Length: 368
Image (cartoon, rainbow, N blue to C red; front, side, top):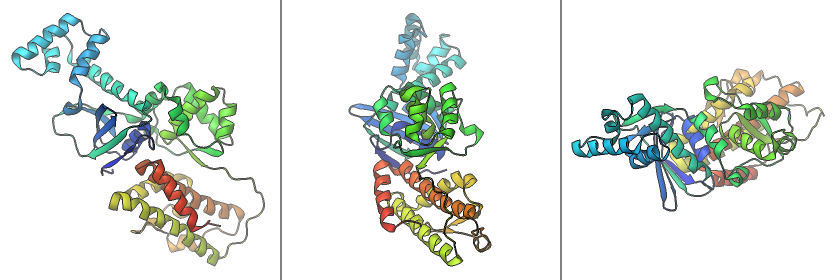
């Protein structure tokens, strides 16, 4: 669990990606969003949406009940009068006056609160700020609303398609499945299930959009959702090359590993300047997310205080570097680790910082 304040612009990190960050890092606190004169506040507890009294739009909720005919206008007037006469909370008055059963009231509060997030999905600009902290005791109406399902439904409803296209990877980048726990996956509809299979067989984003039976628009929507949730990930496309790789000596391995660690340290120093010591936790979490798909060499690695990765000597000296597959596995794992760390910077700080970081890494040189 990571709980440090952060802020940014939706032009760099759209709202669904901000929600995904809160979910993955199991954050608790309040997210304030602002665009022009429009301001909203959302409460989170351990990575789930919660409905907290001070952040709940009570007048808006009562209007919602009337606008959708969920409560008769005369019943609303009666419960409102009872609340004013007794000084009772208006929501409690709905129950005490017999207008709504308790379970029905709380379900409508939950539905209204989820619905309040959907317009923000379409904000292409505006600002956000997260203030960590546990909600005050006794102030939560609802807790534990799952963010993966909310994020998926919000993207399905998005009308700002230009925003989706802006934050998709380039056409030449490849798409691959990422490991995830069963409880991290919301209930996918047929288009998302189809795209998961199509992505596994497609060469890159451009090919996927051109060949998908969903059509380009809905393919991009589903792709944006699966990337946001971390079900799919991307990597730069590489040309086919079946030539044997050059022989590795232990000296070559040491040189490659040192160059790799220079980059790891650079990434850590970059993010730590922005968020302080918690940067180590952010990097550790990014490594945990990919350990299931990289070389066993990294399974028992240790992250040092300067962001470098320390390997067990026995594993390092007995690495199977005598065959091409062993070499490719090592080089691919270097790329995977660095890509995961750069993605962690993007999730935490936004697209602008990601671009600046990548430019800095390019000055360090290639790992070949």
